[in-house]
Image (cartoon, rainbow, N blue to C red; front, top):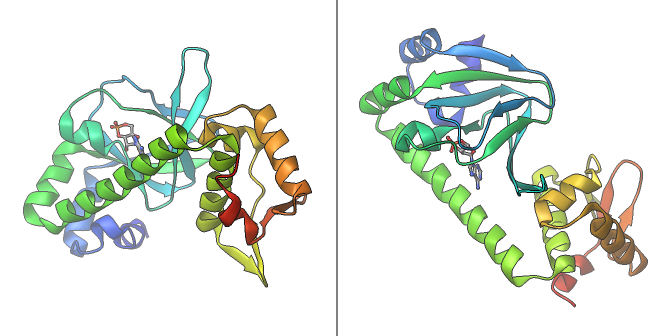
Length: 225
Ligand code: CMP
């Protein structure tokens, strides 16, 4: 069962059944309930976590405890590769947002597999490039857009992640919490609430109990003052 699961993870999709079995034997499965801190920024640790089930957020906190969400990762994604490869402290804190299950893989096991299957290194590089692009975009949004533009960008990004389309509407399902939109767009919950009701009054979005519906105008309007 787990071998099948591993085979579906793009990072390991080209490993033979024997190699997958070896990887499983040398790794440990761990479960964390929703809301658990899996690793802290600054921790020393060199294992990589592959998400078998559930979802996590990668976060940073300022000195007042205000959170900024760098990324959300789901089943099939992994984290912890940075310290596993550069032996530096963890670059961010990782928290479960659902009950989650991980395969914890040592740096040694990954390196052994890379030596046998160099394409794993290419996949890791490609994923690192993708994350760096996202981080560049996040820096640019935080530095160059006003708060309305940042909230609009996050709504569009969340839509791309859920991709539920009904006729001409774009829907973010389920409706994200205000505090999470705030933590992704570098502002407060109160400001997000104000911006969303302004967008709603201007006919750019519609807020329902279950979702947020985005209308065409939002993309064009995202960087207005
Ligand atoms: P590591 O530094 O070992 O521990 C924290 C992990 O969070 C890090 O490895 C990455 O796996 C992940 N991470 C850090 N920054 C980002 C980011 N900007 N986007 C996605 N994942 C990240």
